[in-house]
Length: 179
Image (cartoon, rainbow, N blue to C red; front, top):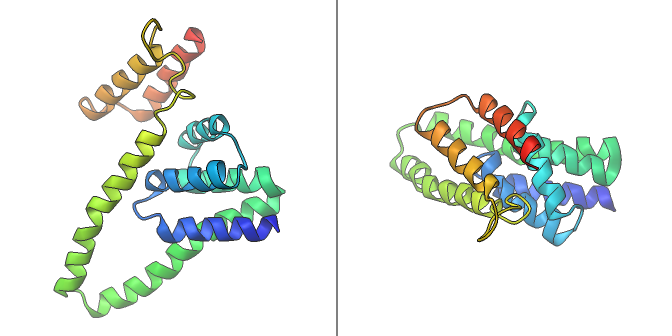
């Protein structure tokens, strides 16, 4: 039964998750944490952090981890495959259609219309990660180190184009000594 649930959940996420891995985070969290309770919010936040540091797309890393923790090695293969399958099928048919209708105005307008939806999904994923599990020291009377680290990393990456790997390492070292 767990294999069918994994297959259904990750095919559904693969179909609805436009915009890449970060856009899928809120969908994955809803299914994995809220609906099926395969992991806690804290475990999910930890896995997101690990998935960002490991090679490969974050959504695939999460699917592999969820599949492994719920159904072992077979579950990890199934969840990863199920997440990719809708994209593979859609890309095949879209490329076939696109080659036939390269300069169609409807095709161009559809792709332009998806951009705001993708931005909204990424924004929702960012908001869902702003919780007490990720910002344990947030609030009046607290030291707010996690918030300061978050703001400094944003400024360094967005405005100064700092190396993200270096920022992750520095943040990890600061967090290790601060907590």
